[in-house]
Each structure stands twice: as structure tokens, then as C-alpha cells.
Image 1 (tube, rainbow, N blue to C red):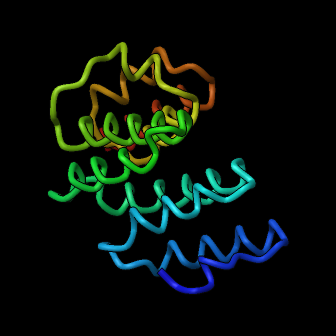
Image 2: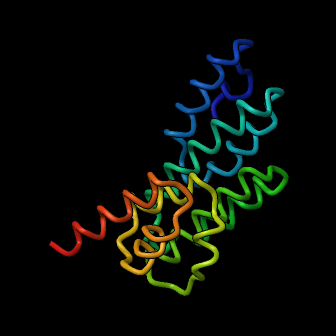
Length: 155
């Protein structure tokens, strides 16, 4: 972790940008500690926003990789006191289950957040998940996108 992370700027926008840069460049072995440090920032909303952006980027990178479960475990320990971040990791874990054809329950997809459903229809290729979201997705946008993805798969 750099000295800059230890002494963040007083300006919240500068700190946010700084945190995003630090997270983008962090070594894997330092990732959890850096996230923990950021989550101690006095502006909890900004800190969680920076960390969730990082979680989304890293989870997408690791989605089908073998190290996904270990990464989620490490990040879960860091984010355990932040319900929004816990939920986001839970939803990435569900996305992974569908992506790697592990067991998943239809009711979990339908109960997941709007963010999850929007993300799922863009990254998943599972016909079963896409059919479910095309028929019962929470928003018209999700249903339409899932339907289009299914049509593309049929071509």
C-alpha cells in the first residue's frame, strides 16, 4: 500500500479518484488490506462506492477463473460490515454459479437486485437463465435484453 493511501486528500472527489487508481494498480496480495484501508475513510458512501467499483471490475475478470472463490472469501472478510458490499459479492457469486453451470435456483435470479438482472443479461450465456429473465425479469429492459440475447444464440 502506498503512502498516498495513508494520507488521502481532504477533497472527496480527489480521494475517490485516488482510491480507484490505487485499486486498479494493487497487487493481489495487497488487495484486501487496501480495500480495508479505503473502507475506513470518513466518507463511508464514497469509500464503498470506490470499493464496489473495484469488486465489479475484479469479479468480472475472475468470473470463470479458479481463484474466484478464494478472492470472494478474502473480500468477504474485508466487506463483512458493509451490507451493500456483502450483497454485491453474493450476487457475483450467483452470477458465477450460472456462468460455470454450477447449481443455482431460479428464485435467486428473480429475487436478485436490478443491478444483478441487468448485469446477468449482458454477461451470461445460459439459455435457462436468459429464458427465465426474458419471461420474468423485473424490468422491461431486462426482459427485452434477455429476449434479444436468446434470439442471438438461436442464429
